[in-house]
Length: 282
Ligand code: A2P
Image 1 (cartoon, rainbow, N blue to C red):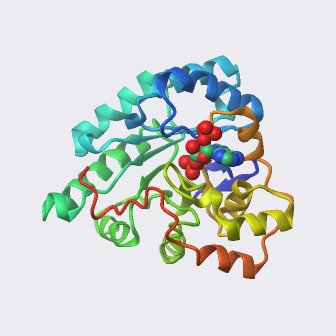
Image 2: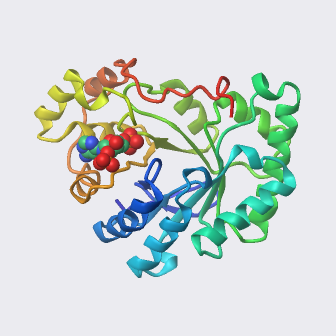
């Protein structure tokens, strides 16, 4: 899980990350320490998860050299804009107890439905602050989350630095196949949030996935992670249970056939977050 991939600025990133969405503050410290113990070196959090302080404590508890870890956090939507973005990064660093982040992402694009003509300007100003903080060395890489290809194209009209990452929802119930290809063609590394379908999805109970899993003597979760990986996407599985954390690192010893990949990508409509960044009112 710590095979390194390279971002478009040369920074190396471990090819699986440990997700902490919906991991409550009182669980996150132990969960993150356990995850590092299990072997994860890449931890993904966000200001809005409300667990950065606990994640930071978990990192300290694990006693691993900071340089061996890859830590991501995200700018929440209420902090968009030049000055507030700068303050938000510092607040995240303070809560995490770190002096730099490996990756900082804009959590959601400002969309036209909510911000009309201001959306583009707001995203551009937020990005300008990200670029400056990157130049200052407070973040080793900068990127986006929940940006669809058209949002990225718009941002690129004013950006000086090309984003290195876009973290979007990717699971068999909401595969985003075409978007992944377009984002990868723009030289972004795509990361998958909710790779197992997230809360409220029926991905893990799906019969087709169960049949494919049985064929490979793997669990459905491992098949999902393998399907993500084989598309060149970086999965961010989340579990607070050590046995599942372990299971979610063990998907490098089998391969899905091209037919199985297609079959899984065609499933769709299995529920989950299925969050449309042009519709959410954040
Ligand atoms: P828990 O944290 O209780 O293990 P996603 O990564 O798509 O957001 O999905 C995470 C959800 O799936 C969580 O509810 C998590 O619950 C559960 N989960 C994580 N890993 C596994 C696994 N290997 N098998 C079954 N359920 C899992």
